[in-house]
Image 1: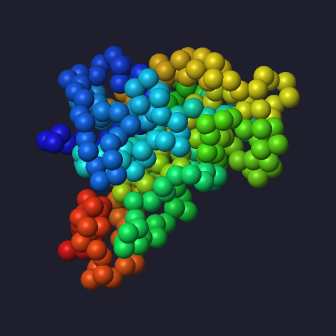
Image 2: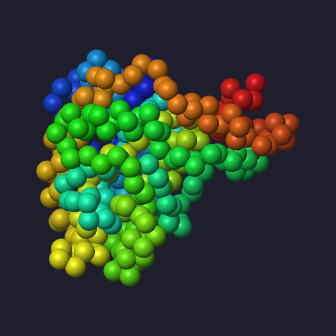
Length: 288
């Protein structure tokens, strides 16, 4: 692999069918954690090489639980990616976040239970800090790009991730509201945490498609409702990505790139050789 990109977009496969993307090529990348959801598409956008990855596969055939999160993030890291924008659908748990709006959250509540949440294990332990799970600097740049693209954007909010693939019951939805959650989705966890372990900046462009099932004057969420709103917002998402690619600051102004510097706890002398080899991409600079 000779490609070297610093910005990646994880979202639907339609995003890299955007006007202005040049020299697009598909890359199949094998990782120690298996294959990615789909081939990684790399193209030139606003003079910048950008990677695109369809989270649920081409044609959306992978459930939120089945997404190979570790393979996806590892593959992007292997390309040299430093910053990731996640584009996803979400339900609103608060009146002010209306369908069609875009939320750039600053917190996550992980309510999943069936997913591998870390690259680490098998003899190498790391305790990563995720008090602030989204990169504030990248989120700020994303907020600006969405605003310039004409989107109604909200900065901040807590994003609860549920296992899925089913939608919530009314009891669950009202409980999440009582907890103070802002929006609800199925893929932010463990994606954001794996990005932090891999020392990549991560920000989310969450498209509000519905009011979940709590809103008494709105119909409960359906797949048709989600798709209709996402289709309407595709142009905004594409334009925001164009703007961000052209305006992204050349240097990172955050601590994401050194997130593992205080997280590794295992004595290097006892790390199994196979584990060290598997995670060399992430830890080599700390285990010289």
